[in-house]
Length: 349
Image (tube, rainbow, N blue to C red; front, side, top):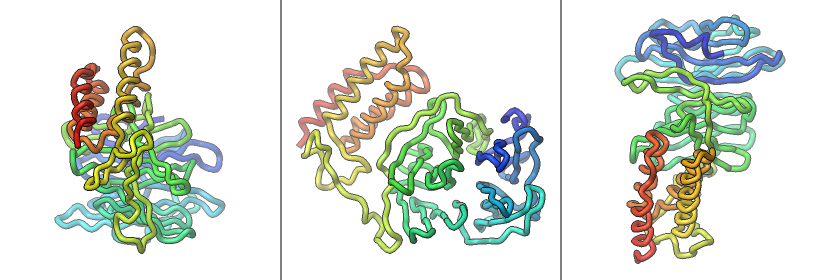
């Protein structure tokens, strides 16, 4: 499907994959033939890609499409704005009997991120807050320390948000899948790197792959290998609660004294759990070199150790760097360094 939209000198971005009433795959995305000027496009399985006509000028940026179809036709939401100094972006909605017949887009609110799905309005603030308004009420999902770049959802699981952004502390990109019904959340990695502005439909994952020096030099790619890691970084609260109200210090049951009084990690820290996951990764990576296909499981254990070590910064950074170096370059972790850092963390008062 993607081979039809991958062309020389053409960038593609922000995919949203769904199925229409006839069961065909439909990919909404944005396309740019010049840096920074994105326009909405759609590709229906068995046909050729085409522009979604919004009626906006050629200087208006159009991005972040999502859509659904019902008995009345098609409904598309997207973000649009100008590229001048101090640009103003808004969330728009347009409806039509077909993908070639849409009404004039209606501005819903000023925002750079968000979508509409039936009675649900979701929009984000630039730093760390996602606002959800629907029949359940007004509530927020907070990601402390993050800058948000895109908020979408899974067409096959509309209650699952896909939140893409960047951690301000280390400038690392991420996509978090967050279930509004249960609060479960997962980081998504595609082909050994954090997914960026991805879309998920059943077992298909597509993401914006960076191929050039520019930050937005990207093309949509279907992931060959996808890894999900349990996360606890997003905090839920009703909209009238103060920011951070849902954050609590909960010590891991393996070590009730794991947390210090001054720290509020996004996940409980436990040195015994760190040691357990490092040990599992050590065994699995050794067997991987003997020919066993344990690479993803080992990466998963390193990630869990990384998450469990947030209280001990030196250990946390060492685990993060080791995991990334192994994923990107195949470099084996320095196990002795881990042992020394674990001993130091365990003996710290």
